[in-house]
Image 1 (spheres, rainbow, N blue to C red):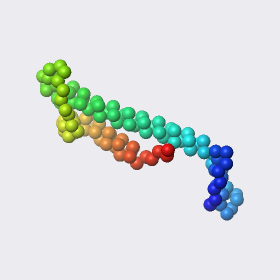
Image 2: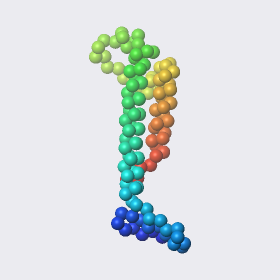
Image 3: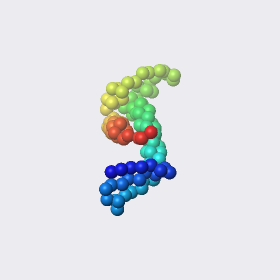
Image 4: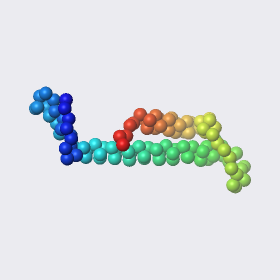
Length: 111
């Protein structure tokens, strides 16, 4: 297969000229742009889910503890604590978050 680039297009030819194709590079640019937008949205969603896990825990499983804390209390929460709240919905959200991160790592955006 031979290729040659001209006017934002690539011509791909084989030994059989009837199989020649012209690929518009603008299609790739649009594809890459859309994929980048999706990946950014996925990243924002992952961040929103993660940020909500603590809030959900404080509204249910950790409610008594949360209500007993003075306003302005600063508390460091780590991932292990959030993964072990005992709340089945939070467990499901962790599964979603883990899958989202896994998929984001698999998808390659051309630059």
